[in-house]
Length: 343
Image (cartoon, rainbow, N blue to C red; front, side, top):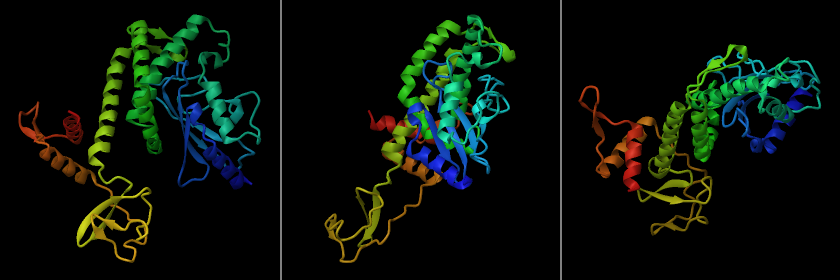
């Protein structure tokens, strides 16, 4: 029953993903029932735009017993929510870690994720703490401002730089895309927050004390965005020339390149009659998809140097420390090549 139920829940989550809720999941390749989760902070809450990570393990006794949930977006000893502990514990009745309506086998992995988001990432999270259900406006505000600040510093900047586990690196494309699509909105929000809060000290429960520095974080965010944007453009336009839908074959001892609608198509005389005037033989040239060996870091750097030289771009620069000529970095070459090709 356990394996079937775990498979059922995982398949349901795959068929009906929760991405519209800002919830993204990846299944562990080696362990059935281990799921990595990225939740993006909902708009209008102190958690807005932050990247919040969870690891979920479905035990051998599932669904009799609830999932084991661990919270992993940590930094600066900030208690991001009364239900989220610095040690990683997630305290909610639905998973039997707090008093109240408990776990039921009728619940699913999807319903647990929706519940975590709905119960934790709310507008006034301090009200989740027993005794603070009727907290004063000033108490709510102080805690909110600390969480709002840390959702950017830890939730965006730190998590983009170093996710809590290697496996969470698989979410990087989603995170980069989110930043690129929302950079204008995030910058405007930070500008407003900087005017209101920079230099003002906030103190709250759990011994939290913070003096915001939004203006500084904006600079770091813009630098991060520029690195992402420049790398995306340069890699797409120049370096990654062996794109997925391009295949190589040899005709008369020369490499010929042509494109298919599907990179997995098998080359046959029915698919392509000739290439660059060279008629194909009656037999298929390839009986299975060709696999191109991926470029190594050394190969891609050599290729960029070759492109730079052809564009009359210097591949060396003067060191600001020693004054000697040194090789430009990969990112510097990417940026210069991109700028040269785009006027």
